[in-house]
Length: 322
Image (cartoon, rainbow, N blue to C red):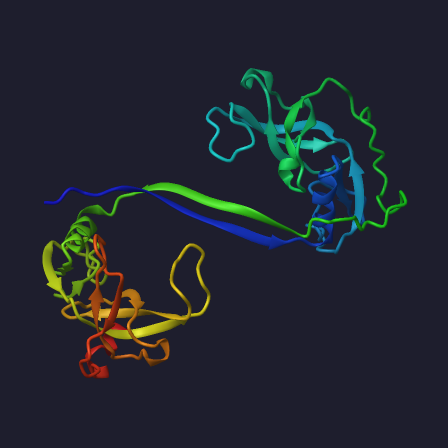
């Protein structure tokens, strides 16, 4: 039995979003070391601000300056900070209700240890030295001995204070990187499948009950639910069952658009796998097209599939695999 494989994997992409006028003002003013909230029609001040009242769903635009000091309402100690978190040394995650606000803001508190943190403790913003108009312009919170109202914010409406609410060089959008690091183990069946691919062979497993051959194998029949163990070599040729034309170029993928991605039923398999189609103009790819794998030197899987020149497969031969 082959060794079960495992490998570290990373899923990462930049999440880009635009900002409405309220959050645009919030981030723009953070860049200037000012914290804004938004006031609802019943007098509550929400920090961080939102554009619609979470209770009434009314649109709200009345920006209010609050103080950079506040009170911890709850907390949790983070003994092992991870990549990308606000601090590299152990810290507390805290919900802080800033003076003048009625809701709490989540951020990090720089404290020497969990014994130094408590609900009700007073804290203040520690500003980042370089500010770009992001929540990270608040580097973290730190303990503060002062009382509410000592830091100077008036709590008045920004508009009432003589400001239009429109700021120069506003922040109109943000890019938030999303990343997931994990270790993947394909299990016994797929480990054997991957090892066979390294020898330019494709193997599936046959269900002992329905006798269907599944590629890639999962170790169990998805229809019958019984374990599979009998290996069956399939392909290498196959038939295009369905396909799509890709017109948007993926970042870091060196393939010119448009190109075709297809489901391919390998000969002898009862499940279609997906792969790129090459060696033919994208607008000539069709259902029933007979294809074969194209390997590149040192690759562990086919680079793409190309037409074999055979007559197209009859629809009846692959209709159950659509």
